[in-house]
Length: 177
Image (cartoon, rainbow, N blue to C red; front, side, top):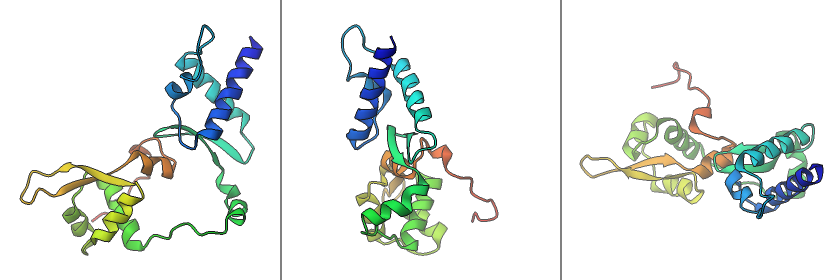
C-alpha cells in the first residue's frame, strides 16, 4: 500500500513539474488507469501531502484558478533573476490602473473605465491587456453603441496567484470614487 501511494506522489509531482500549466485533480486522475486508479478525492489528498512535503523549500505547490502548479517562493526571486537577466515587461501606470478597474469593477466598458480614471483609455492599453491574456470581452452592454463589457480571465488569476476574484484585496472605501 505504501508503495502505491509513493508511486502516485511521484507521478503527480512529475506531471506538475513538467506540465508547464496548472492541472486540475481531474486532469491528474486521467494519467492513471486500471484497478489502482485513484479517485479525485485521493488525488486531492496526495496533493495536500505534496504541499506539506514542500514546506520550508524554495518551490511550493499552490492552487490557482486553473488548477495546481509548482511555483517558486517570492523569496527566491532575486536569485532566479540572476539566471535570466532579461527584464519582465514593464507596464505603464495607465495599463495597471486600467487592469485594476477591470479586476475590481467587472464587467465594465471602456467608458466606465474612463469615468473612473478621469482620462481616456487608448486602444493600445486594452490590446496590451488582451495580448497578455489578462482581459477579454464578456459580452456587450445593451445601450447605444453596444460597448464591450470587459472582465479578467483565468490567466489573470493564475498569473496573480489567485483562485478566485474574491481573493483580491479589499478596496479602501476612502480611495473609491
